[in-house]
Amino acid sequence: MARRKGGTGLSSDADEARQQILAGAEQVILRYGVAKTTMDDIGKEAGVSRPTVYRYFADRDALLSALIERRSRMLFDRARKFISSHETFADQLVEGLIYLVDHGRRDPIVRILVSPEHMELATTLVGGSGLAAELTGEMWGPILDKAAERGEIRPGMDLAQVSEWLALVQFILVGRLDFRRPDDPGHRVLLRTFVLPAFEPAAVASPAAAV
Image 1 (tube, helix red, strand yellow):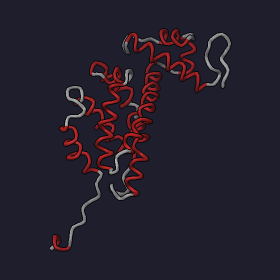
Image 2: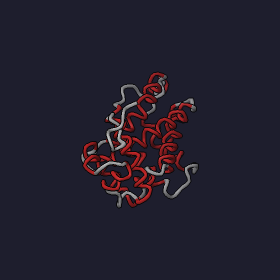
Image 3: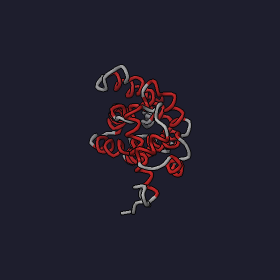
Image 4: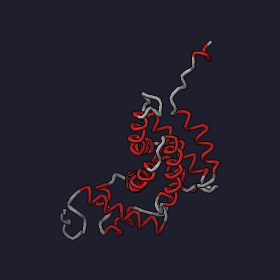
């Protein structure tokens, strides 16, 4: 285990130190909300000075982006187990998208970051930086690869483009799930009707149909 830096309680390992600061940031955001959280507050919670926080994160937006990554990856671990319990790609995609959005909204940190009053902030941090597409690709890449091996989706799909598009779909679902229950069958109808067909292999016309 990495040693703590003298007097600060911060790990001498850079990655561990970043995680300590992010853990402190989570507590401050839960206490004050995103808008009122300052780098000073985060430093005090983590037991370090503000300059120390800036040593690991260039600015507040960089810290919040890292926090989104941290919480998203914690959710991914649970989501992959849930998605793998479904046999077909159709079920994995539909149920997986709903699971990710629903559980993301339940997360005490993610819920704050994607709530309507902070949507502009989240869009700037996640959408503008490409982080949303990056995380989406990390989450769905292995699932898409296996589906392609089984012949359940069109071959040669560009993962970067798919990730960017699925990230947009998830943002739309976040807004929709503000007002409807996640078990509302309407979500599934929309996803199966308009999202799933984008992945399905093109139907091969029969000789009779071609005449």
